[in-house]
Amino acid sequence: MKDAASTVAQKAEDAASYVAHKAEDCTTSVGQNMKSLAGTIRSNAPHEGMLGNAGTAVANTLETYGRELEQHGLGGIADDITNTVRRHPVPAVLIGIGLGFLLARTFAK
Figure 1: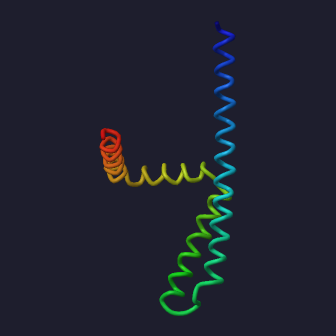
Figure 2: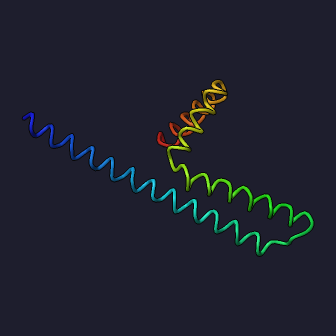
């Protein structure tokens, strides 16, 4: 019985590790695609005026977050969320309550 439980635990750990590895691969790919999209926006957006400024701002944001995803992956995102919640606990709790309410309403139907 102990051996069976140990085997199941090991298989669950292996599966979790595999999923985590695949998730990291996906975030790296998303980061690269975001940076590529930023380059496309830069090359195709107008270079002057309000649309040029908006295109540059969007491209800069995509490139920044794409680089962040490539370098830090999901761990970096989790750290950012944790730090934000620590800095702003009351809004974080209110957002959590709101999301919980919306999920409960969605699944109650």
